[in-house]
Image 1 (tube, rainbow, N blue to C red):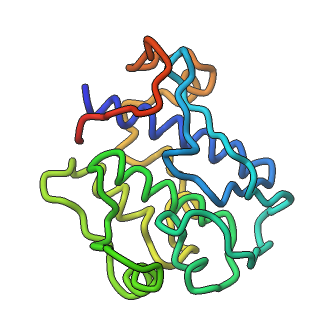
Image 2 (tube, one colour):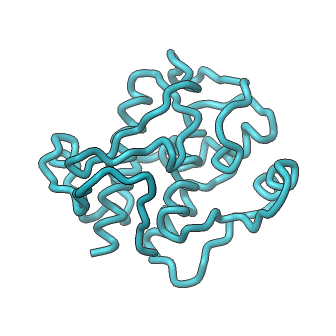
Length: 191
């Protein structure tokens, strides 16, 4: 049940990111605080204050923006970047969703985080589902050209094997979570 729970919400996020990117929109601040669950239990991406529009294949951005914990290495290192930054942030978000931790042993300053992200590999807690771990390993790739989502079809990843994409796009798949009331904090079980 928990695997379907995470794969369902992760898949809805994939659809949201792909929808934005297909329209040339890069969110640049994807994080749990900018992901809501509507009354029917479906994902809604919000806060479009940092978006960049008209970004299609080959076009790069240079502005530093977003929330530092979710920033891709290319942003932290002040390199030109593209829509791949949303896939990195998606990976950090999934790791938080599955483990309640970011995949870097970070405590302290932003400059310390920049060094960690730039020079070390992500570390994942023991016991994380193997398919979820493999998905994270393909999303949290430092080279944006090799990052899943930027290359390959993320929908084909084994983590999403239970997802019927056409039905999900048409919201024909019932959500495993239907909020009974509005809450400012959603506590999720660990994956």
